[in-house]
Length: 286
Image (cartoon, rainbow, N blue to C red):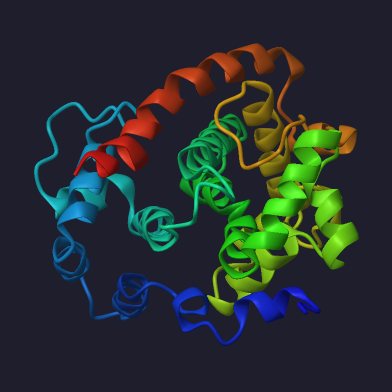
């Protein structure tokens, strides 16, 4: 019987180990003698990742005036840390394949995650955040704990999702009732195991209760609001049948004028289509 979220993460090297390419990139980026060329060489070894980053650099996200043709040019445009964050997002999407459709619909799950990430990035830009890509990654990862549940305890995960579908209960509350913890707690353990930045850990761990975040309450509030907007727009689903309630204090914390909401919604739907092509659909067609 699973006693705590550590039981789902610990001891499974496929889950608890950070993807190899991220380990390699971290080493190179943290080496003061490394260059953008060194970073580009590692990325270039993965043709799929190289193609995604080039598509991203040439996308409306960056609106670069001329065509970006090399990975080193893409890194220069996007930024080293931002590239690392985007590699994290795409690597995780590749790592969690093969979950049975009877438990959760993976296409719909990633659609919701990409919608949340896209919205979080838009809100972060409105807030003039230095690294808006980190918010995109946080949105991609915010429900990652649910995938671990579906992988490690598929029958229990299916029963909880079915119960919520039939009763209209919120999934994270049923998870707490049945297991004593929810998918956000599992995501927190995983990201700590991966030794990811504390900002990402808190944005994932507290996305349902953003004011629980000790150091990054405003940033976590951005992901909280983005998650709700993605649900309200019905852009995919992570298994939730309801729109989770909005923490009113979270809206105040993100410091985005209420009049900007309509613009944010329009921008989300426009950029979501772009992000979907970059992060998901084209990969599936290969």
